[in-house]
Length: 160
Length: 208
Length: 208
Image 1 (cartoon, rainbow over the protein chains, first blue to last red):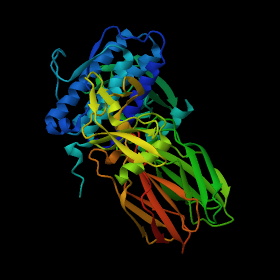
Image 2: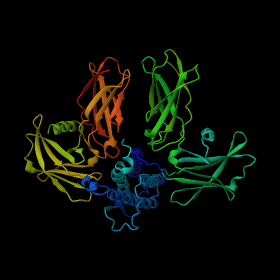
Image 3: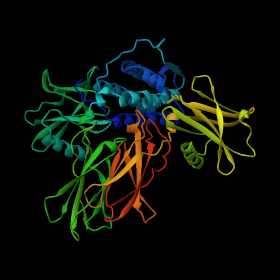
Image 4: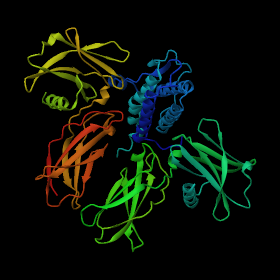
């Protein structure tokens, strides 16, 4: 990718704010906004002792797997929701997840495609409601994605 | 429509590549190119296709906008965009590739000028306080930078101050008892988002 | 211990919920609630249990800290935490549930004030440069915001400037030949992390 490294965390903050907007919109939605079946989502929880024992590659793969799971889950939610205001939030969230992948590429973080089936994937939960899914989405961006970006090697070199 | 004309004429001056493209907002992306009236074909002869990295290509419907000097602008507008991913654009006339360009949408913002520019006295001699409202680009206000140009009304050459992620600025060292003309323009700051300078806001006049 | 008292008294004023909780660092989480001396039971009558989403509950051992005005604080401290996941807390006295609260630990940071605050001249009239050392919290420096309060020493009401993810700030428009008092405080910015404002740093005095 010819992109310059995107080290500016305001970009992620911007996506987090939009993810929060989607969560708020979902909470106030009354009709046509349910999830048809439960979905696999990444665990958002961070124990710093555990996180720091992982090497950079493991951390990156965990984040990429999570982003991929969220994409799958939001795509499913998109098909089961009929409320048009929510469609725009969900579409936007999916596009933002693609943009986050692009940001990771810009930081030379090796691309990782998780196995086609989420069955048996470590570090996952099930979300059974749309609000749970969108809450996981926000917390995953705030937590693990932010940690990976704020610690990215490609952004440490400007220390002169 | 008036807004598009202004932005188009700005890009016709500043941007050598074709098609010329700008993002007016998160869900507002426009590309266009110019043709001479005599040499231009009909709308159905042209096709505008684009694709994001790793994705299938899509077509953007075109429309024609007449422009000054016997020119025609062929315009494509998208209300969905993908940032930080390379977009490859191809324009064909019949079978022939006439324009070919790759860009990142987040680097070609061209916003409306700041609104509601106000100039007021700070109470201190030789100072004026300038305030404005950032263009509506939700959650990206902290990535904007501004230029404030000011000059005594009877003089032509202005001085410029820069403000970042702020919507006010204090002008200092002004001549007292003088009427000043003040204008503001905006651009994304170049860190992660970038683009062109907006047009200058309408002038506001204030006496020190 | 002195630090805990300061933070506790701050939360007793600002936080209506019980138990009151704060993270002082990445591996430093404290909750407490207040009881009147007469009505308080003995330590072994109380239990503090917590659990993270989808996990079994654990118990946090309690200790008693005497407080001003004949009060007692019942305090639980954890040096291992999980962030970005909801934590449910329950406090029982004998069999009775007396407090019940859910929170995210990363949203209740209460840091020590910034250290090594220095104030120096910039060489320009009416300006002072303020610098400080951010609290040492890996991954979080970019998420910190600061307030700098300053006022001439003979005046009571100060002005406040905000700095984000930075450890310096230039104060402008000061009266020359005046001694100023400067203090700084810190808070997480509300995006990935959030919390309360720290106490103000000890004052530094400097003449313009």
